[in-house]
Length: 298
Length: 298
Image (cartoon, rainbow over all chains, first blue to last red):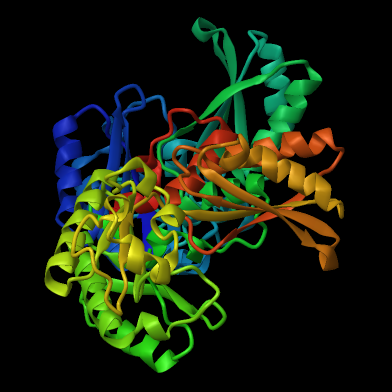
């Protein structure tokens, strides 16, 4: 099976689109890597990029992107609503096919080491690549942002995994590995936001729910609905159907129906197949039974 | 999108496995065609073969198989439990990806014309390729089998679509086009076969149910279950979830639960995606959102 890895670098530039294009041009040059998507936000002053391809090629594309972003983005001049600590701010590697998480962790470490050594940019390993439990959480790694980290990087608590304990204008980078994230929203047939908030609180890991679900209730007043907006950070551990069935049960308790749902952006095939086999009750289904798989070998 | 077509030729040989191998060797020689599966049954004296690949290549493989089977199989010597009328008995083309049914119909006609002209074997177009309504049904096309057709082929009612109105030792071939067939079985938590029979009768098209479902109730007494065994002959028109939900409702009426189900053999990706999006309620999902699709382009 061909190995496929995704990488979703976030860079701290969402206003000077010519600069964004210059940085994307580095990625486009790398054969064997597909630029799946990118999206610039001026308020956040940030661009989220999605690359996919063979693991080694994706690492090469991420490296080139980091080099160019460090050259073009000066954190001392950067302002935006989104928390950030580096020109390239976050670089997660995501195993898509034929890869274990451990391989992504190794690639994250390899890239981090090279960035620290050749570019002298401090690197923090995060999520599945974290070397300390408190660094699993990206928010924790980025605490104080670029400005705060200038000082705190000298403390032993904030010593980077690679590179110097000194922050230049390119800031620091969080490099890590994580499962694919699926944005899954479920709409409730109510205008009562409090019901949505209670359900979101029940389902998200941070308040006692599922460890792999982040959730918020959103008021879609023009549609007369409340939406449970979720980030499913590991659909193998916590599948889509489990989130849906949980919400269905909780909503029924309030006498509220589910009136539809949506998947925003991309979803791994396996996450959808898990849903199909769960509801069909075909417990011993193998993905080898998918006709197209026999032809395309994916 | 690469076009993919499946073909499931049935040949009237299931005992002389060396002959079967010789015929399969013809198929294996054709580049761009994958021999997905084949299964010989001695009682039926018949082998069911499944090929897949680019449409033109699959037609070439079917042609070579027909030529070799006509050379090796003598219907005057053939006995078996399964109804048959030819050395190659049935050749259905099935659109899998990037193809309309109409293209399969055209390819069926092209192959039929060549078989009639070059091999002087009578050909009947059936199912979606049928030229007369009564020839849609394969059982009707094969009525009287090889022995009966020797006489009746001279009547206007049985005039072949291609080839002479005379039957040689290779018999006649039904060539056609049809949607992919999915074998879907649902297990009921009961030992009462009568309940299964009532549900099978309700769901199958031949007794008033869904036009694209063939169904039988089977006694799985050693498992203490009754199974509704279905052939879903068009999962676009009649999706898997609709069959399941129908059975669930009918079974609940008898106080009987569904205790699992199975898909036997291959299933098109789209049929499984339809199940996932139905139960998730993601009504505007596009298969372009499948990550692997963006990479492999299937």
